[in-house]
Length: 163
Image 1: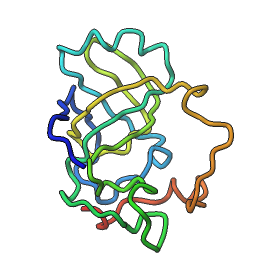
Image 2: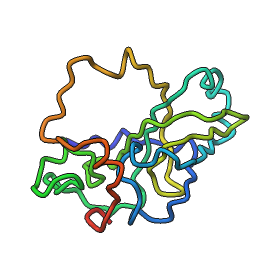
Image 3: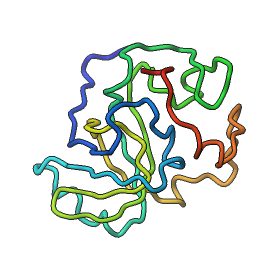
Image 4: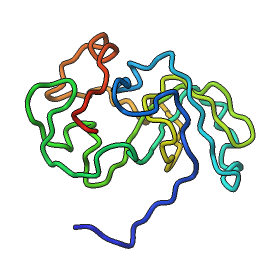
């Protein structure tokens, strides 16, 4: 049940070379060489202290360039049948929040340069969290219906499904 008391403010924007979702990599794995910049509002700059000690971070952001619709069943990019939206990374969600794990290049003042970015230019940034393998990578994880190889994911690009 929606609760109107929860509202999130952007802490900045993500700058990337992708002007629209079409043709963009579908996951950071397919964007290994793509560089982007997190432009954090200056009022949040102090929060970047010590981030440069990590090699990767988790970005939480708003899918601002996707269709403003919610579908509880979607056909994901790596499959040809409908799946429950909560078993996918599709942007048509009740809360259009995206997640990407990216490599940190540098942290200066109120900007973070990252590599492996798979989001549309000017995407509102909601939060940054350090990626910690001991916390974030379970030893016994199963990927459910998703049996795609890394090479399949790296070559797949977004199409009109979620525009």
